[in-house]
Structure formats: structure tokens, C-alpha cells
Amino acid sequence: MSTSRELVPLLILGAGMSGLGAGIQARRAGIDSVILEAETEVGGLCRSLTSRTGCDFDFGPKILILDDSDNSADLLSFLGNNCQKYLMQENVYLKQFGLIDFPIQRNLIDLPSDISKLVIKEVKHSTKHNVVRNYRDWLLMHYGEYLTNNVLLPYEEKKWQIDLDKLDYTWALSRPVSVSLSEMELGAKQKLSPNKHYYYPRNGNITTLTQSMAKKAGKILLNHKVEAIDTSRKIVFAGNKEFYYDRLISTLPLDCMLKITKDNDFDRIKKSASVLQQLSIRIFHLVFEGNHSVKGTAIYFPEKNFIFRRVSVLQNLCPALARKGYTPISVEVSLNNDSKYISEESMQKIVLKQLQSIKQFGKLGEPIECIVQCIPYAYPLPTIGLKDFVKDAHDYYNKYQVYLCGRGGNYDYYNSDKAYKQGKEAVLSALQQKES
Image (cartoon, helix red, strand yellow):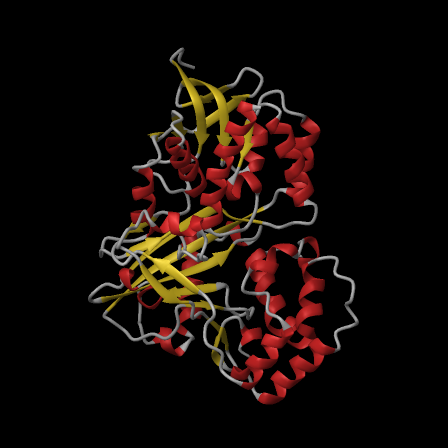
């Protein structure tokens, strides 16, 4: 380890959405900060790559699902006029019925009337599962046995790759999967207009946003992977340097943070293994020759005969990603302990064979380019007991003037706007504690 040292009033770990938010807030408050980033560029999961054919692919589609808050307006300000608003028009694919608008429980009119009537009847009389202990119970309580067992449960199990009895349900209350009975009844009688919007750069990709944010986030050191943290002495070891800090904000995944913290409580680390679980995904970015008309934006596949759980038609989802002469799509597979060991080449063959069994994708032919991307920390799993453990971890670190935020620091499943907001709030918390 080099003896090179640097004293930093506010040190931030990670230059993803929450880390950039922290840097931006620090700069606004007149606080000198340094962001340490392990990768060669900023953005975390809000990044993009470019294929040899010139097609841009985000690390999984990174549309901005925002509200009318000041925080959302603040986030959009980094794009200036280079921003476009779109209606949220996603789909579910069922072999028997084809494309159905998503979420399916809001669009029951797309199903045969006898099925939609059955679903409504079951929801009204779903007293069998009146105790909600986990995510499976919640689905059955709110959507009945037919819809849950035939569509929702298979999809959620494919997505999370875990027994749903082990997942909390409260995370879903603010997600599209949450639809009220009154809305279901209305959606069984008439076609409902989309009730959500999203934003995306008019030109460029999601990196356009994070690069703009980085210019306002203060000093950022790339290729600085954090190796260890000494909370008692207030030292971070990264990039062959010792960074001495006054306050520390971490956006690192909480399980990683616990492991690299010196003199940490071993029992806390041991307990985290059962609570802090994360989902890895493999994305196949495919480029097909020619400009083809393909229906759908983000299409979800609940049926087990498809290994993938989502296909994104980029030219429809984000027009900025359309390319003359090419049709780019992204296919996402959630990995479990078995599929992790299937080679990328073998899985690619499975994906293409299954994709081509669907008429509108089969007409695309063979892809002229395929980029395979693995993302290890794609989704934190909302396991039962997670919230209590995270609170305990936050209390532990706060005693040492260390503040955790973002999807990694909170091990929570939420959108970019909330991650950005948490980064800003972490700075305010650090300053308030310092003043007190």
C-alpha cells in the first residue's frame, strides 16, 4: 500500500446515481468532496455501451420513471432540452393470447370475458388468504388464484429466482404490479389509457444523463476500487492510496460494505448472508439487419417455456436508440444457481431459438451482432427481515459518521430518481450531524 494520503471533508463511494447525487449536493452546499469509482466511467447501472454497428444499449433499459416532485425536475434539468416524455405502454406475452397490455391485472379486457369475470369474482371472494405473510400471499389476496397461478406467480418466480414465500410484499405497493380492485373492474369493461409516463434523452442514451451529472458532482476518481474501510480511524483504502475523511457516504452494496469494514462485528456479517441476497442477470443485446416493424416496447414473458423474462424493443421504447438499417433489441435472463453455469454461448442459442418461435421475432432472422452482458448486482432481493437488518446496519455505521444510501446502501429496489434523492439526503444528514 502506498503512503500517498489525501484528506477529504466528504468522501463518497460509488459514482452511480446516488453517488453523483451526493456529489452534486455537496458542491451546492460548498463542501469539498471526492467520489471514488471502481469502474472506468461514471453511472453505475445507469450506463450504456455501443456495438460495432453503432447501436447503443443501456445496461438494461434505463428509462426514467418520474413524478411531479422538485427532485424529478432537478434530475431532468441535467438533460436540459434533450429530453422526451413518453407514455408507459408495456406488454405481457402469453402464447394463448399474444400481446396483452401490462400490467395484465389492469387490462383484463384483453382476456376472454369468461376469464376476466372469473378473476374479478376470485378477487372479491379472496378470503382464503386473508393473512399476508409474504409476497405469494399478497398476490393471492389481491388477484385471486387464476391470475396469480397462471401469470403473476410464474413471472415473479422467473424474475426473482427465489421462493416467493421468502420475499416481503411491501416493496410492490408502489410498483405497477399494485392495482386496486376498482381499477381491475374498470379495466375489465373498457380499455384504459396508460396512467404512467417515462422520460429518456431525445438524443443519445442514458450515459448522456450521468455524464452531464458528473460535470456538477465535483472531483471523481475512476479506477479506484475500495479495498478496505477503517471506520475508527476514518480511512478508506482504494487505488493504492489512503483517503482520510471527515464524513463518509457509501453507495456500495451493503453486503460488500460489511465485508470490507475493518473490525466489523462478525455476527452481523454472518447474519447478512441470509438476508442480503441479490439477483444477477444476463442480457443479450441483439442487432438484426434491416428496419423491421415489431410490436411492443418492454415485453414480459411469464411462461416457463421461455428462459428470458423480458424483451425490450429499443426503437419503440426509446426512439433515440433506433438505428437506420438495424433493429436492436435486448433480452434479459434472471440467473439462478443452475443457469449461472450455463455458458454464454449455450444460453445465447437457447434465447435465439425461443425468440424465433414467436412470429414477430422469428421474421427478424439471425442477428448480425450479439453482445452478452452480465450484471451481478442487478436487483437486491426484498427478503423478509431485510428492512430490520438494514436499519441495524445504518445505525451501526452512523455512529462512525458513515452514511449509506442508494440501491446498494439500502439494498432496496427502486428507480433512479429515488437513488438520486437519497444521495442528496445523505449529504444533508451528514451536515446536520456535524452541526449538532
